[in-house]
Image 1 (cartoon, helix red, strand yellow):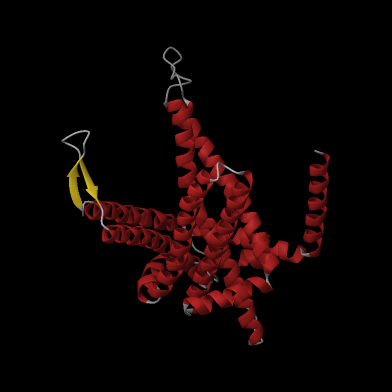
Image 2 (cartoon, one colour):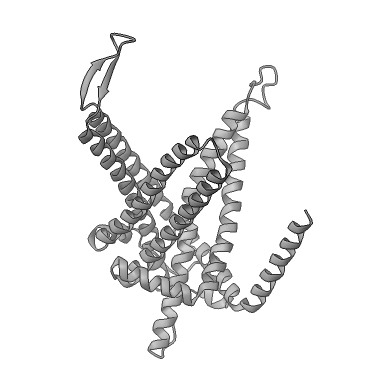
Length: 351
């Protein structure tokens, strides 16, 4: 394990010099995180956005299941040889094509719901950043956001752009699903050959990296769309250039926000699991203990972690939105030889 120690030391030294060389970017990132916390504290109603879109996605999925059952029943019905009461539905090629189309449509629609959820939060953060902050509110935090604008802008101005970005994500998701199916067949046919397993793992890793990259570009394109009202492709290019020009700032913001998000999600999941553990009666009723508490406790932890991830993601979206608003505000003020007037006081005081 000596080589692992030396690699860790080298990485630590490299990270230390990066922090020293880009200390200004680190300060900006910390200020952005603090400002995002102010936005979240000042706009608590934004937590209703993922709840609303969760039920929208749930209704869409239930309708899709009903439609899939109807499409799946199309075909020649024949009795099985084992039992007269059982029936077998033989699908035609057209039925298979319909099911493939429906599965792809489900990926597209669900990605579109996720995009609408992100865009509503983005609009709330953008309106909060550019709002009047001269007069503090009753809560002591200057600024106000318009959460309802995100819903209106989604369907009035950026419906096609969000649908196009969701289409790209749906295509990548479909490619990953097809690859997993083909990969299982190849792995089984090769007898679990080590080279084949390594090759499939490498391709799987590349597809996952590309999926993460695409979703990150999509999110930043949505942010640029909310600020500039430009189309998806133009916003994607401009946001990508903005990220390249301020790579360290975006990197530090992502790193710091990921750390805070993980700690928040883990604490929420652990506390919820402990409460569930107590309610199950494992520690209270010792006379009749549950024989195998691992399965329900693991289910509680996984579900609570998933729910916490949905709500804590608002903080990540808000931090990225405020960072782009800050950088664009500085660029516009610099081009017009003016002082930026929309920077929140917490961000100004920290810097």
